[in-house]
Every structure is written in structure tokens, then in C-alpha cells.
Image (cartoon, rainbow, N blue to C red; front, side):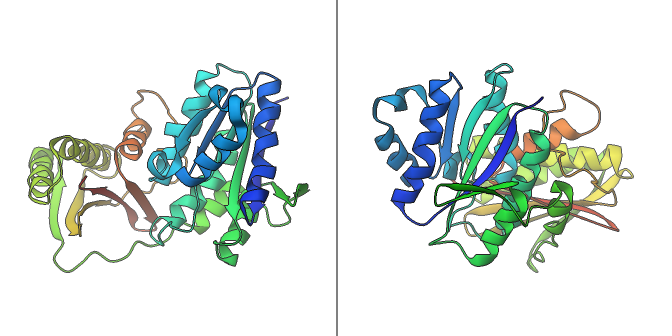
Length: 306
């Protein structure tokens, strides 16, 4: 029987945070389970200090950096850590939602939390997700109940009354993207114009101030998405480019329908079904938003100048 647990830890101050996380870490270490703590830097420092000498046996990641793109967290943080454990149970503290998350990022965060339940349903893992009740709005806490089968509050565990099926929750947050600005540049593309589309992205990104490595990452990402449009969505699509301050935004639209919300969040291997390419995009970009509707799919990627 697979031992998978996914809990939301509701805390209102540092004392409650440590009361819920320190025993979780120590109990895992006591039975030989690998432990990962991926939380915002301030909470990371708080927990590291409270663990004392035990901290040397824990892997720490600043979630604001490692999980800036919520779509990156499952493949690039959680699954990557579990894969290194080679089949044994792992314990993970992951805090993907904090008060500084933007309205643009938030739907992808809730999708991420819901899809953990699918990504790990057949893997031995105990994942604890802290939520700061003093800083987050009531609707965020309602969503936490919807995406976690178990809630921990005041050192008590209870089944979540609001828990919902993961794919239904992910679909609830498959929300339309904000309209591009009037000055967005559009490039229709097909198989014969993929090279021209890549050149357009590179030129636009260089002019916007992205570094050489960032330009390469963005070109790779757009090429993966546009190639998927050509191969899997009728042979053509539209690329849009614009800037928001220091951030370059690229959107690929086509008439295909991305029906599986796990695409890009689990590693399918080097297959011909497009999943590896979308996962690569999640790993390379600062934010990836997807909206699938009756007439097609729009995938929008963000990369900010360093």
C-alpha cells in the first residue's frame, strides 16, 4: 500500500509554524526518511535555526526562487527530490503560496497544489504545505482545504471538509488570461516559418535586455511550444510578443486542446507526445500560464531580465 499524505498546515505566527514543522522534520529524520524543506527564505531561516544540528541532514530550498513558476515545483523540486530517494518514503515541507504571490501567479499555484495529489498518488511521500492565516485572504484558505485531503491546525489533524477531486480543482483554475496589450507583436507561424519565429523571439528578447542565456532559454521554450502546435494542433499557430517592465512575455496560441493538466508537470521521458517539451518550458521560465478552451489553447510564458 502506497503511503502518500498531503496536508495543509494552517499557522498564524512563528510559534505555530515551528510547532507544526519541527516535529515533522525530526520524526522523519528519526526513521531515516530524506527531508526537503522548500519554503520562502524567511521561514527557511526560521526552521533551520530551530532544527539546530538536525539541519545538516535536511535539504533546504528557497521556494521564492525554486518555485517562482508554480508549474516548475512538481517536476523540478518535489519529484526531483523523491526520485533521488530511489523508492523510499520522503518528507517534504513545501510552501508554494505566500502573501507576495500575484493574481497572475495564483491560479497556477492552486493547480499545482491540486495536482500534487495526482503526481504522488502512487508514490511514498508525506508532503506538508504551510499556509499563513495572518497574511493570506479567506478565499486562499478555502482553496487550501479544496486541494489538501488533510488539514493541520493548532496541532490537530482533521480530514478536509472542502477537499475536491484534483482534476476538477485544476479545471476550476483554468482561467482566461488577461488580454495582451495593444502593442503586442503577432507572428503567425507554421512548419515553414518556425525558424523565423525563433529569430523574432531572440531579437525581441535581446532588445528587451535579457541576457544571452535568458534569450536562449526563451527561444528554446517558444520553439517547444510552437513545434507542439505544428505537430499536434493542426500545423499552425500564432506567436505574440510584448514587454511588461523588465519582463518579456511570449504567448503561443493554436487550435489544439491540452486536455491533461499534468502535461508539463511530470516527466514523460523523451516521448513524441509533447509532454517533455512543456515540462522543459516550466523549468526554464519564470511563469507559465495555460488556458485551454473550446477553440484552442493559449500558453503564455514570462521571463524577466536579471
